[in-house]
Image (cartoon, rainbow, N blue to C red; front, side):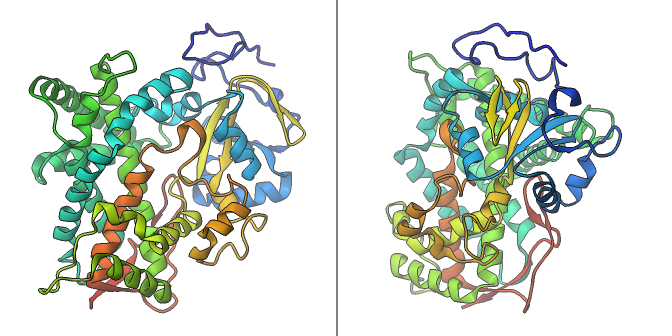
Length: 471
């Protein structure tokens, strides 16, 4: 069995007796033999079986082995912990057993190192507090104006049949360049967007080394381009004074002692936040549009609510912008978005690494184990949801939420690593719907049920074919 040596400690790192870093030590099958599960094929394990249909794979493993099982994939062993109670254990992390940095590291370390999700404990807390300045009311008010203008400009041309996913992906990237970086739409923004797309694709590429002509090579090259760009821009904005965009807020953010964040950390945080924002918002907006197109009664309820709040289109038929102060008035719209996030969570699973031994579900989980929760499964479990495959926003009335396990719905994670940009995501989706539903009826073919690529971030394989019919 592996011997887990004690790591050097600092206030920023793990509890005492933590195992060495994930890159230095991995557990063997013998270390986990007491936990039920499967090794899969030689060398590749269950990697390709999981990628082919991750939800069916998880369902079969749970039925066969229970809510704690081991699985060999992506070059190592992982322990799955299933259910709302497991979500709470890992995400709330009351006893600091789990490392987010070492959980995500094997997937993201070459591309998005030192982002907030790849930090733990004091270091994470200090940097998160510094970066939270970018999500205070005044910057958020600035972003809302940019979002209203950018979305209105783009969706005005969407009338007729459309593949929604590529359209919203382009729009979200352009909005990120505008709101996050303060760049006008154009060739420079396109180059930045291309680099981000390459990095995200590389994060789940089966070949994990940047060999020529691989996705990982493109991703590593994209990172090099963005590191150079953001480094120069950070120095420039500190010298000239920042604007209201998110990048300028990060570039001038200070820690508790008043010191500026190091330039390389600003760059890494910006890289990570752009990735985390644009792909997850693209996925969640797409799933919401799908559910509204196929549930026209709910679409009409949201349209009525939005019209009541904005006052409806102006005299020329142009949708009125959604004012920042009116965001909290869209109760039904927010419930519909939450239900869509339940049905198709943009991050369907979440990894951690155990920094010391613990017990769960009657099993001893050794220090050093890669562990993970299955958000998608919990969101569709009849233990927590009645008719879980039916779209029903009324699950998110205050009474229903109070009666349910707090960690049965976790699309934004939870605990100290709760998504820093969740309010930005709500704002962007509400402004998008305000523009779309004041202008169009969103329609899909009768019985439309597209196949989805479920992992790593869900997207419809056909691009989501809908029609925007002018009102």
